[in-house]
Amino acid sequence: MPPVRAVSRPRRVVLYAPALHEMGFKQHHVDGEALALYAHLRREGYECTFLDAYCRALDTPSAAAAITAAGEVDALLVHLWTSDAYGPRLRAIADELAAVRRACGVPVLAFGPLAVSAAAECR
Image: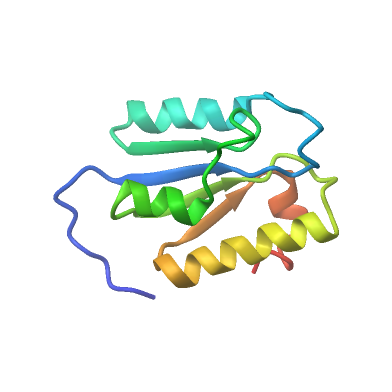
């Protein structure tokens, strides 16, 4: 467990809603639950970058690129909003989250139905 660091700046998080289905499906869909969490975090004083893969499907940066652009980030919050995205797509998401955890050294917190049902894959 990394030591707790004194934070003299606002807490900063990246909220990521990755694409759970093929890109031709659900284009320009906005993740309402993640958007509501984004508004809540902003209201509570967090600096929050919202990265919704469906809203800007063609030009959404990776989670690692968003963290790099945001500067020092305290956590990556990941909304896995459906429980029917298994197989290669889930493996790609789990690999991306593990790579972000290793490369950026930030805690990755996943929430939503898929995060619960696929906890073993996302470790």
